[in-house]
Amino acid sequence: MEHLSEESRKLTHTHENDPHGADTEKLASVIRAAGYDVEVGYLDFSLPTIADAVVALTARGHKKLVFACAPGLMMRSSHSLLDVPEVLREIKEKNPGLEMLYAMPGMPFELIARAFVKKVNAASGAPSDKEQVNLKAIHPGTGVVLIAHGDVPHDFIVRNAGVMADAETHAHRWSEMVKDWPRSEENDPNYYDTIVLKVKLREMFWPVTVEVGYLEFASPDIDEAFGKLLAAGARKIVFCGGTGFFDRSSHTLIDIPEAIEKLKARHPDIEMVYAYPDVDLVMSELARAVVFKIEQAINGQVLPL
Image (cartoon, rainbow, N blue to C red; front, side, top):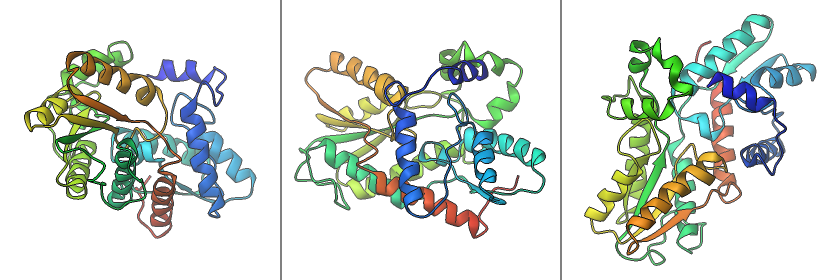
């Protein structure tokens, strides 16, 4: 994807054509208001880069920097465990006098689960400031699909390093090839953490049934998760973007709605609701999650670089 990323960075990004950037800046503003000197640095596709953010902060006199992933990258994944550390090591090599702390990837499940409660309540027309899903607002027979972004297992990458270079032009083919690859916490911590989150949500949403549906790279996909809920008797289904889909992006504004529309066409008798991405609704939880990771890093919970 490197070529696409570089081409995207050449384009002019505005709040209108890049809502993901606008939502990320909103989150950064809330964290700044809490007293942290924050610069946003993008891993790919947008500017400023992570290196640009370092330049801005060191120009203000900072000698020690904490790097914390935004919620979309916070879970343990190939991005947070491999790609981001690689970028940070390059920066560290060029800045030997700079102390760099990379907050250990991983999701504060309690905070993020509360954000999902808000999203499902709002999609169901219930007050969103509840600790549990508002069952009075949810019809009997309702199920929830938590839409997750699958990851490529580490051992698949190692075994197929030479041909993974084709991923940019054959992303769909690679997704189909790896979706049924055996998963474990060791080779796909993102998948493992998503299951942990699903268990937590099932506790908070009970008796509403929750199934995970992956957009790509893992199973079950959204159609399969939908089928599981139908088989369990659900006649109303709420689709909720997972940890990588809180903000507005091409995935949450295009890919996920398209998948839902295809299901609606095939199942006109089933009521379907999409919990539209709204960072303002869950800003408190998202900002607290980032601050939690920052403080963890300051207290020594870091990924060595």
